[in-house]
Image 1 (cartoon, one colour):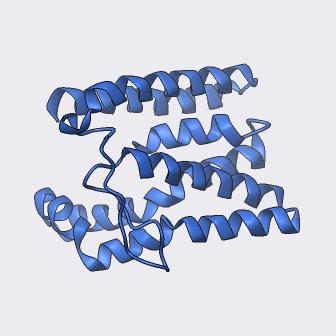
Image 2 (cartoon, helix red, strand yellow):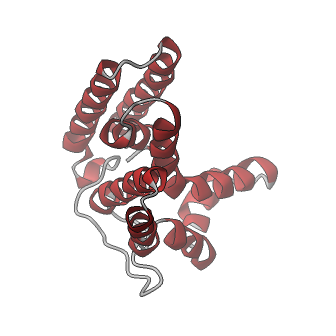
Length: 189
């Protein structure tokens, strides 16, 4: 899924209350599995001036990038964080790790041909899902509208939790980004 979708869904699922430290923990857990990709891709595209096709068709699938992505997308790493949070009673770690694991589960089922090795350090196997959130050759024409509806529902849940005006606008930006990007996937891919 797109990162804005992860942020909306993770916050709606785990930020209770949807403010302060709980909201920040849910947002952090929702974004961390994608953060290294943003850093590596941004550095490659904008600092090193590597063409996008090379970044996303070659570097993304290189052993070096897949190793980094394996660590921050590992069910074992996030599961350990969740277990530690539960064991120690660290509520914010539990929220963040839960949001991170939800991110991984959604990605596991929605990445066809571009998944990540989520069972690091045990192995580097990658599940090749038959469905994709963006690739129309793997049913994105059906998945994207479902994803958009789930994001709209997540926004409605967050709205009902009494967000401040600033937070409502903050999440409205994520919702608009998700709807726009999902539309682009459907139209062009």
